[in-house]
Length: 274
Image (tube, rainbow, N blue to C red; front, side, top):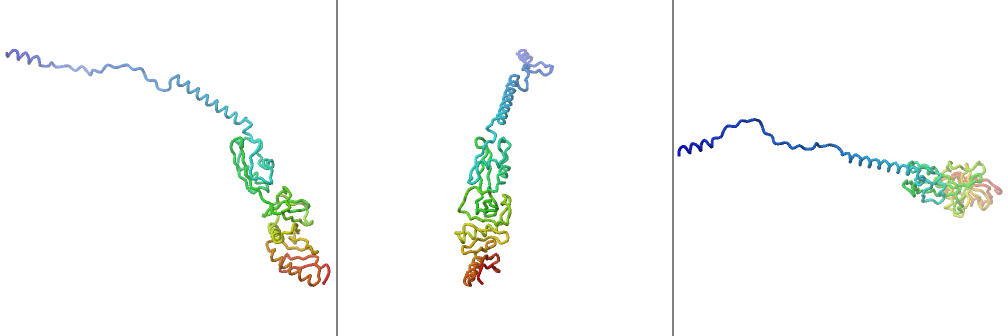
């Protein structure tokens, strides 16, 4: 019995081990990882890049060589007196490429015309690459000097007469002024204002005279000339004129000329009477 127990104890006693170093797990060889783009991918990217370059080149070639991108005409609105061809010539953009168009420069070129008061310019793509909406100045009267008639607006700006306007008051300048009025010469605004005021007071007046020293006047149907000067004091001058005429006729005096340029000191010349 005792011998059996001893044998069992001997059997359970562990023998001392010897540490011979860490035993590593068996390594599994893996294929090396290749970084970057595979050879097949590199070729595809180059093809795509080449197509993009070719496409852009074709687009630029067409953009600068197709006639549709060059200005041959314009779309306009708001014109009454100025022709489309005249406005196009003013812009100075004939045969220019749309890429080089400057809307502000085009507007400034259009405004050089004395007939144009304002303009809006839009630049886009064909077919209507350039669109211009203008506002024209309106003539207030016809100014005739040295036999040449021109339109004048309320600010005294001179414009070329575009058509016959019988409804406009005509102001004929005395022969003492030489040469026709030029497009860059402004008519005195007080002369324009006075003429329009006389027309409003006497709608039957169709023609007024103008003298640089005597101002505005007309030939009275009773046989004399009358001068009113300029400015917007015409109602007061008319009152003085009518009172003076009544006094002269009552005294049997036929005036040759009546001057009320200064309503405080009117004077006249006598044809006959005393």
